[in-house]
Amino acid sequence: MSYSILNLPDGARIAYHRYPGAGPGVMFCGGFSSDMTGTKAMRLDDWCRQRSQAFLRFDYQGHGASSGHFEDGAIGSWTTDALAVLDQLTAGPQIIVGSSMGGWIMLLLALARPERIAGLVGVACAADFTESMLWAQLDAATQARLRQDGVIYVPSCYEGEDPYPITLRLIEEARQHLLLERDGLPIHCPVRLLHGMRDPDVPWQNSVRVAEKLASEDVRLLLVKDGEHRMSRDSDLKLLLELLAGLIEQAQNR
Image 1: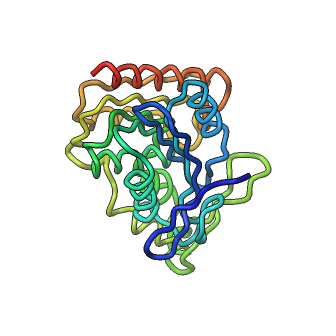
Image 2: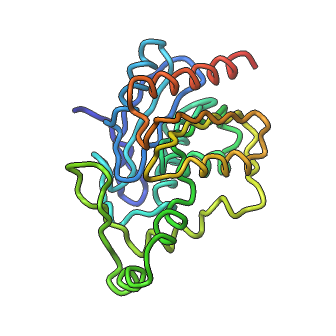
């Protein structure tokens, strides 16, 4: 599959697909160990093309077609990738769609570039997952092994997928970017959160905590009782697109 490359000053190469169209633009931030060819990214791409809506999807370093090794990545470096994409490859107001870890990164983008963000759509928003869903759930022996070896491998919930490498650097660096222990998040744009109540990876209560922390009063949380983590069924994607369409219309009418 063809893609374009954004060359960063440090030599990193960020792979991306961009579709020029009407504003506000839509930018997709994928999840941990995911890439820009996933189901949600491709459905959003098709939908935006049908509407002639500007759209951009990309791979963080160590993911998909971008340069780098996955084990070298961290929340800060992946957020830096997303900021470079936002700053250099998009123009005007953007609606960020963040899936899982991408939901954490979209919040960090909104804090870093509030003037560029017209709205946020989080799918199974995994803010702070490294601390509350990884580190806190490791027993003492596994924590000790991670400190000693620098990496452990966590089995995937999904059949046929390799275990995920979890590095000590990932855990420790992420502590600089934790959001849910703050008094509040000064994010004032409209926010829509979509979460499955049968999510085995990120509890739906995490999206409730995000909603509570946001300064914006225009926040809606949609829970899907039989929804799982990926929220990639046709019915889930329909809900996602309805939320996105509403935010686009809202931004265009301001």
